[in-house]
Length: 138
Image (cartoon, rainbow, N blue to C red; front, top):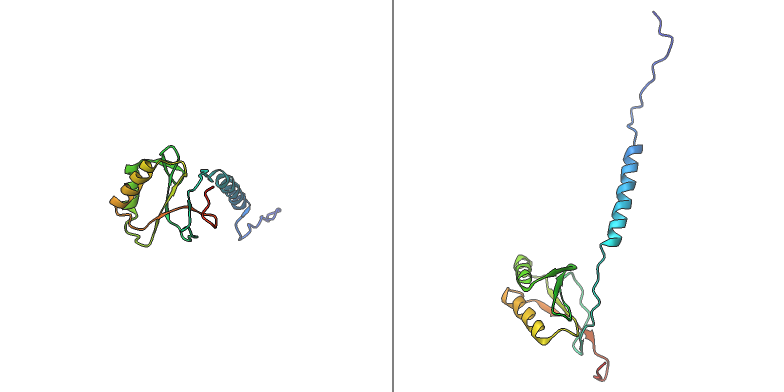
């Protein structure tokens, strides 16, 4: 018997249309997620005549005016800071950047510095704005 209809030949290449759909959906998801992932805290840094620019990726700890601490946008305690310092102790070249608010109390500042130093944070850098020339206060 002779077949009257021809068999449809399948293409040797797979159909990539569903793959492209998934890639574009993932791209849109990550672009939108990245827009919401940016967190910032407004701080008024203290002035210092010894301030200079710093480059690198330090371990950042923010000290707010109310005495609260933050790391990567998340609130932390002094105990959490000591664990962070000890966890990063293997990377000796990584500096610890303490970013104090100008309104933070001296007691909170000293407690934070002491906790960092006691847990092995000997590469501590304190963030400050450059003081104006002439030494006047803002």
